[in-house]
Image (tube, rainbow, N blue to C red; front, side, top):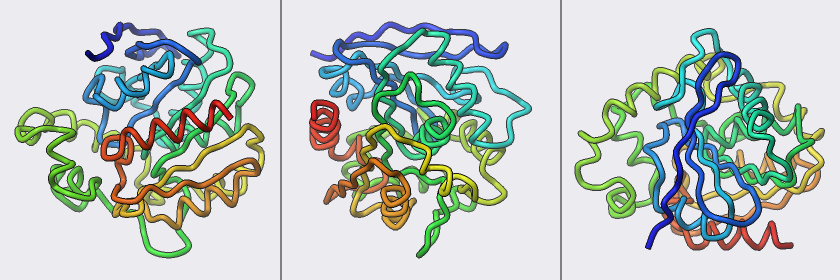
Length: 259
C-alpha cells in the first residue's frame, strides 16, 4: 500500500510553492527533473518508506507560481533556500534529480547550514569535458522524456501508455520555464564547477550508466569537484535513475545517509 502524502503550499518571495509531504524518518527534499513534477510518484513512495519526504514543485513548474523575472537556475536555488527556511527544516538530505540536481548543487554552494547530506543524480549544470547535454528544445517533448529512460518499457512503467495526452500540458509548460533558465549557455553555469569546492557536506553522486541526456562525464566532474563525495553508477538505467532502478536508488541513498 502506498504512502498517502499531504499537499500544501508555502509563500516564498511572494510566490506560492506547492509541495507534497509523506513518510517518516530523517527529513529529505527531492527536487524534480526539467520535465516537471507530475505529482507523488511510485519512486516517492519508496523514498518515503525511509524518509520524511518533501517533494515540491520548483518555482515556475506545475502548480507553483512562476517567477517571471527568473533567468537562471541559481535564481531558483535562492528561492528553494528560502523554502527550506520557511518550513523551518533542519538536518535536511537534499536529493536532486536532473535539473533538480543542478538546483540542489547551486543551493549547496551558497547555503548548507541546514543541509546534512546532498544527493545529485543525472544533473546538468556543468559543461561536460566530453560529449554534450541533450537539447530538449530541439525535439518533441515526448521523445525527450522517453530519451530519459534506457528502454521504452521502463518509460511506460513510469508514465503509462497515455502519457502523451496526460502530461502534454505539464511537459510543454515545464519546457518553457526550462528554456528561460538554461538557454544561454545551454544547461550549464561556468561558475558552478569551481564553486563546488565550497560544499563540505557529504555528497552522493548517482548516475545511470545509459544516461543519454546528461553524459556520465558530468557525474565524474561533479564527484571530482565536490570535496566530500562519492560516485555510484547504476547499470541498466538512463537519466531517470530513480524511476528505472528505484530499489537500487533508494538503497544507495539510505546506505549513504546511514553511513
